Amino acid sequence: MNIAIFGANGGTGSELVKQALERGHQVTAIVRKPESYRLTHERLRVTAGDAMKPDTFTQALKQQNAVISALGVSSFRESLKPMTFHRETAHNIIEQMKRQGVSRLVCLTSVGVLDKPIGPLFYLWLIKPLLKHKYEDMRQLEKTVRHSGLDWTIVRPFRLTDGPRTGQYRVAANGVLDDAGSIARSDIADFILNQLDIPQYVHKTPAIGY
Image 1 (cartoon, one colour):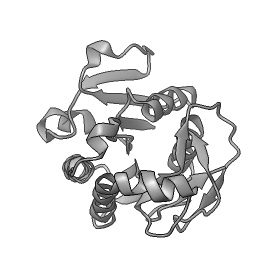
Image 2 (cartoon, rainbow, N blue to C red; image 1 turned 90 degrees about the vertical axis):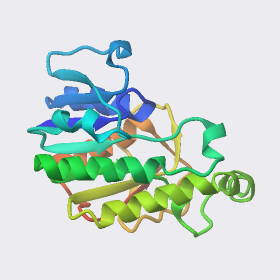
Image 3 (tube, helix red, strand yellow; image 1 turned 90 degrees about the horizontal axis):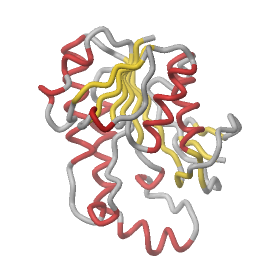
């Protein structure tokens, strides 16, 4: 399978690239600075592209079977401010996928988009209110993806860690998993790639956690 990955130089994105190659896929990593991307592989193509600028990546989507977006705002300071990054990049990716005839999209948001009080008290009382702008932008991303007409899956992980891949995690198809506190990026990558091999959650928003 030919897979294009946005955010390939991030924690989750790098796991996606590594595991996709392990599974035998052809991978196109779309990053802003390909010269700084260190991983090399005979089935890996690293290409320059900025998801905020559609004309920089549209050619990279040619002949792809699926697109994964692991894009996000990693800076905590930037996460405190009003933003449109998530919704804009989703819109740009969707439009260029349609242009190139690619229909399968998997992207990430967070359980933080839910109004339901899920998580420890310090998160609910302190962290979640601080990240209200980021979560609102992610809600708009989800809305954009749902109305895209593509074969989409939106994955809502819990708190991200750098733990080892276990392949053992719980999934809630309705996007609500009440008591899962964390999930390793390696297991998120495992789940996402499983959805490309055997799609169980097309047009669904599964939550994932331990």
